[in-house]
Length: 321
Image 1 (cartoon, rainbow, N blue to C red):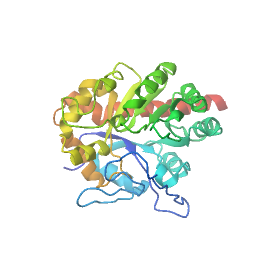
Image 2 (tube, rainbow, N blue to C red):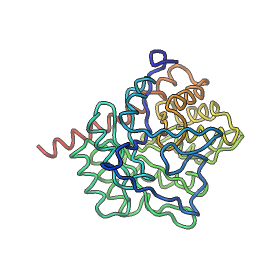
Image 3 (cartoon, rainbow, N blue to C red):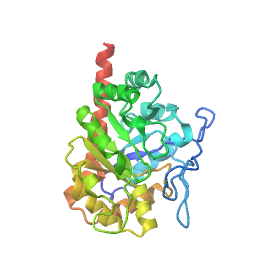
């Protein structure tokens, strides 16, 4: 299948990793010995390692632009690669500045750093930021108090002010389910923020009626400003566990609605070529209707993230006028 026959796609989760290591030096993180289980391939090297024949492609911006053209992808969300660059967001910001019509930047920042709210304001002013992804320490019981800590809420307030996306990865022991009450509290406290939950909030997938998307996840379905990404990480977990990915995606659409679900490649972490990632996703969508496919393939992600970037840029312009 060529770009001319591919459906139009928007990639809501792509990690950029620069070939130029002098201008953009890498500072890789090491996963802690007690870190939560991650499916094979979810490690700190570009492309990851998993499956019988792992392929590790480094998604430099220039290379990703070519892949996008080949696969009929008209935009990506460039999510900071913390395992490679930690909190130095230089590469995705420079890339989104250079290709503003194609790349929307989501920075990763320390939720507990006092300078984070001001840094978000600076990024909005200087770069037309699309979203923020916060991280912080994890307690022994797997909980993440940084998610709604007093310091983190200062950044949430800035995101509300500028209409940014808050892009969350909150994996802990027990998957993302334990964080659901805090997420619901935050979405009601900040109704102007679009909250996007990465990798379906990483349910503990298992065979059965709901594939881990149980009644806890159902409580998220009624929140109008919560959205979900279905990515190669979910597809990898399905493959490793022998779970039918098409039924998982069908379950997610039935639960959350196609207008609240979007595709993300996870290139730069998950392994495989970009073409393979696109094809695996398309294969998983066979149970969706044409309208549902159009939403999940393209329209939901673009509506959520492009609206965010445009609003933040406009707000920044008004602030500087």
